[in-house]
Length: 247
Image (cartoon, rainbow, N blue to C red; front, side):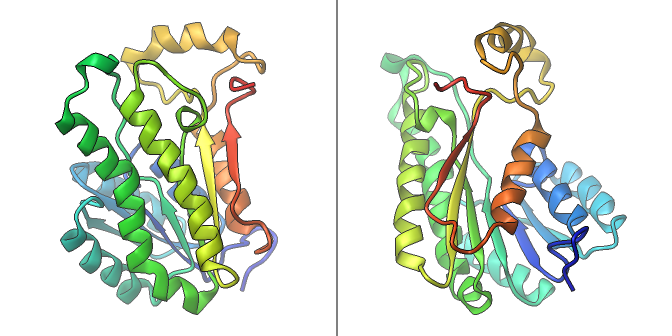
């Protein structure tokens, strides 16, 4: 049973792209709250195995399933396996996505389609497949958007457009799935995940942010947890978590 320290005890959660980075932090936060956790991964099998061991150390059930969220034939069996292993589904976190920096005139059709496939089609496909199970439990969907879906970044036209589409998809789903399912979206700003290649960029961005720092994975996981535990009446919201950078 849920308690103040384990508000998600007895719940089943699926985090797509959960093996690394923000997905990993979200999965760990869900387990800390008592939830059984399933993650999907595409190429990060080693990271997925390590995470599952860490999740199981928190005395919850945990499974990792290889899945390409952009492919219908991959999504269908993956969701069914999650439900079969965990006995249902209460919370879906659509986290799997790709990010790319390309000057506008150099974006190819292949690059454009690939970003939309992972960032917009993926959440659509996974949610559609999970819908029946989420309705059974009066569940929740939490999409991972981006400040780039709210503000234009000149060298990220395809990425920004894909995340803006996901923000609108969030609102559409919130209306379409009510009153059984609550749907919300977290839109991270500049999040420092310790990437060596991004060190100089992150150093430049921190003083430009009103909070005078970049975000952390724990900042994002905390807001995902807010939506996971919030009243069911909270739906259709896009919450920027950016330290005020988008103001």
